[in-house]
Image 1: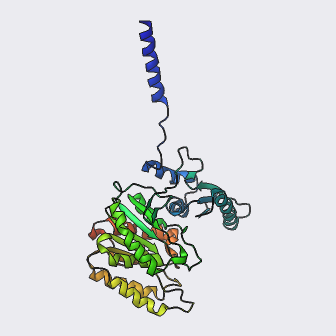
Image 2: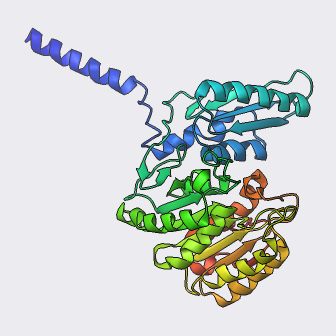
Image 3: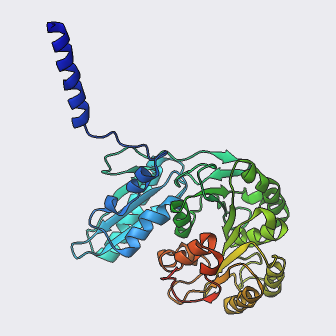
Length: 373
C-alpha cells in the first residue's frame, strides 16, 4: 500500500511538472507560425518604421546564405537598415554587414551611430526559439529559396519559380535577393524556388530551353500551380516560357523585363519595344495571368510609358487578369522591384493577381498604390 501511494504521488508530481514547464518551441523549418514569429516585427525591438519592417519581414527572406540583416535606431524613432546576401561564410557576412551598416548609421543618424546585427542567415538575435536552417531542397535545376518557408508540394498553394537578371558573362547573379513582394506569396502558402544560372552560359538560347525542359518536374513533384517570376532577363524569359507552355503556368510576374542591353551603349535596343509587343502577343488570351512592373529612369527600357500602354491594350483583349504596374515616383530604375516602397505599394496587386478570383484582380494600367489589393 505504501509503495502504491508513493508511486501515485510521484506520478502526479511528474504530471504537474510537465504542465508547469514552458511549451517546447516549435521548429521554424516545419511550423509556419514559428517561422513568421522569427522574421516578425517583434524581433525588431523599437525600430518600427515602415521601411525597416518591410525590409526585415519581407525583403531579407529573399536573400541567399550566407546573409545578414543589421539596423540602427535613434531615440527620435529614426532608423536605418541594410542586408546583404550570398557571402562566402557567416563570418564574412557579419564583418561586411557591420562595416557597411555602421557607415549608413553615421551618415543618416549622425556621428557615433552604430548598427546591431539582427540576423545571420536564420539566426535572429534575442529570439528565444530555434533558428531557421536555410532550406537546401532541389527539383532538377531549381533550388529552394534558402530563407523562405517551404510548405511542401502537397500543402503549398503552388510554387513560384524565380529567375534573376543577367549582367554579362562575368557578373554572377546567383546570389541576388528575390524581391520582397515574392515573400508575400510565400506567406500566402506558395513555395519559392530559384532558377540560378552560371553567367558563362546564361543566354536565352541556352537557359530558356533548360527552363522549359524542367518545368514539368515541378508538376511531377506535386505542385498544383506554377508562377514564373523574374527580374530583367529573368522576367523576359519567364514571359517567353509561359507563351510556349501556357498549360503549365498559372501566372507570370515580370519585373523590368529586358533582353536588349543598356540604352547608353551600342546594342539592339531599337528592337526592344517591338520585341516586347511580340512576346506579349504570343501569350494566349485565356492564360496565364500576367503582371509586368515597369519603372521610370530604367536604363534598360527604351520607353517604359510605351510598354505600359502596350500592356494596357493587351489587357483589354485577354480574358485573364493582365496588369501593368507603373508606379509613380520615387520608385524608379531597373531594380525598382527591390525598393521597399514597391513591395508595400504594389505588392498587394501582385498577390491578388496570382490568387484572387479573376474578377477581383487588378487589370490594365496601374500607377497608384494597390491599397485595395
